[in-house]
Length: 85
Image (tube, rainbow, N blue to C red; front, side):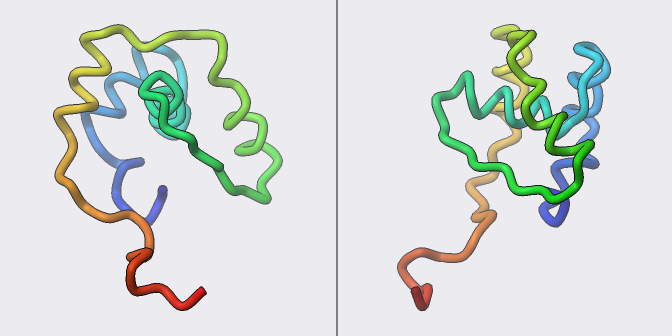
């Protein structure tokens, strides 16, 4: 997530502040509410705990719409059609 600029997005920062959460938690919660399966990876204990701490709030429809509007159809991982498994 850090390499794609999401953590520095001003819209996400504002939403995170509203819920007293990190931007990463907002993105994970948006994934969950959007029925997107996400497997976060971290070896940092603090971030592992933060990744789990997304079940005590729900994003409002307005906030979900704001996050949805950020979509630029960019790939954030390797192209599965051109990946050597």
